[in-house]
Structure formats: structure tokens, C-alpha cells
Image (cartoon, rainbow, N blue to C red; front, side, top):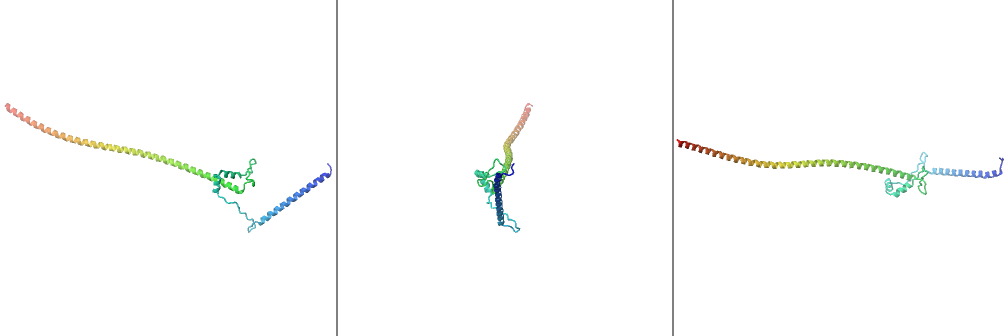
Amino acid sequence: MPASDPKATCSSAPLVTSRSGDDARRKGKGKGQDTAGVDRRGSEPRGEDGRDLKRLRTDPPFSPATVSQSVFDDDSAAARLFATLAFPDDPCDLVHASSSSGMMSRAGLRLLAIVNRVGHELEEEIERHKLHADACAKGELAAKAERNKYADKLERRNKELEKALGDNERLHTENEELSRKLEVAEKNASNSLCCLSDRNAQVAALKTKVGKKRTELKTVRL
């Protein structure tokens, strides 16, 4: 291998020079950024202990009820919302938020979290209402069954009472009829007794007459 090559020396000199120039520009740029950052930090308000005060968030206020309603009621709004998602962990299916920003903003993440929370709350509320409706339906069915049971029992009692009332009326009618028959029998008995007394009187009179006739016959024979 030769000790020195003029062509190689000439070609390497500009390369070293360009590299040193790039390093100098990078260092200058870094210093400028550090200076700008220090200026910005110096211009920010500080507390009494010299610490930087945290910036107040300027995210626009939002209403969870309005967001949930607009997202869940409008399919296009839901599609636009979920189209802003970005999944950096998925190299095969990376969804970009828009042409201006490649990742989802903090406000978008907060909005998505609130939408998910409201969705879960709505699902839980719907499930609670379903359970309550099922319990009410079961209670209503049990109450209807109990009511039907007592209604059937009351109907049977009413039928028994009607039957008893009918039997009572029938017995009352039979009693009245027997009373009339008894009166008739008593009248017939009294009439029979009168007739028997008359017959007995007639028999006694006939016996007296027969006795007299026998006495007369005896006297005639003598």
C-alpha cells in the first residue's frame, strides 16, 4: 500500500472540511434553540420560589351529554370521531388523524375517554333498567297469579253461597208446603173426630133402641 496518495489526499480534504462545516452549523443551530428556549422560559411567569408556573390548559370546554348524544345519535359523527384515532403500536394499520396532524390530540383523547365512559354508563344504565323491568314484570306476573287465585277462590265461594241460598229457598218452599199439608191433615183429623163422635152417638142411640125392642119382645112372649 503506498505511503501517500495525492489524489486521496485531495479528495479527503473537502470531505473533512464539509463535515466540520456541518458540525459547526448543527452546534450553532442547537445553541440558537437552547437560547430561544431559555428566553421563552425566562419570559414565562414564575412563582415566589422561582419555579415556573404551569400553563393553564386552553382546551375548549365540552359537555359530556352533548358529546355522547351527538356521537351516539349520528353515525357520521361517530365515524369522524373514530377516524381520528392513531395506533402507533400497530405498524400494519396506522390510522392518521388528518392531513395537518398525524396523531390524535390531547383534547381528542379526552373526548374519546369521555365518549367511552358515557357509553359504558349508558350500557350500565340500560342493563339496570332491563333488570328493573324484568323484576317488575316478574312481580306483576306473581301479583296477577295471586289475584287470579283469589278471584277463582272468591268465585267458588260465590257459587257455593248461591247454591246455599238456592237450597235455603227450596227448603223454605218445602217447609211452607209441609205446613199447608199439616194444616189440611189437622183439619181432616178434626173432621174425622167429629164424624167418629157422631157415629158413636148414633151407635149408642141404636143400642138403646135395640134394648127397648128386646124388652118389648120379652113382655109380649110372656
